[in-house]
Amino acid sequence: MYSQHHFPLLHRLLHWGLALTMMVMLLTVLLRMGWMDKNHMAAMIDQGLVKLGIIITDKQAVSIARAIRGVMFKWHVYFGYGVTGLVFARFIYMFKWGTHYQSAFSSQATAKQKAQAWVYWGFYAGVATSVITGLLLEFGPQAIERQAEILHQLALWYFIPFICLHFAGILLAEPGSDKGIVSKMIGG
Image (cartoon, rainbow, N blue to C red):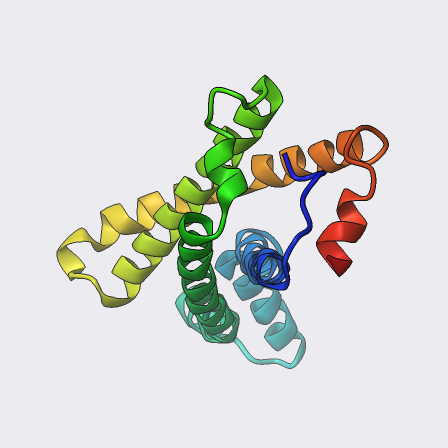
């Protein structure tokens, strides 16, 4: 689908901008789910304070843990704004200049090109869901906050399979018919 194409600078900037911002957001999510889980951090805080002879309640320890995680969550929000802008720009780019996106659905497109296009459209549907629900969490009515939060958290699970498919596609394409695709995505 791309092997015959030169990747214009705008295409590459949007690609790498989305990759970077989404990886930072994924890192914040994985940290919050794992090592920086509020209960795990509260236990570490409690243990550290006990060594100093300071006793606090579990509720106080969780409150301190939430305050520490709050800084990281701000980064999640800031990079979410970045993703919002980049994905909006990417949609404009795809519809205005992305002829290979439309040609993937033409009758001349190969099954491989059509499959790639569907994977990418699935990815962008997931990104759009993440962006919309994230914006609803920030600016939407409180009445739908819980539903938006559930959808926002579930939307994470499109990203990990996409990354795996993306890297598998690169590994298959690079030695095959799309030789040089990585260098083209970096240098044009």
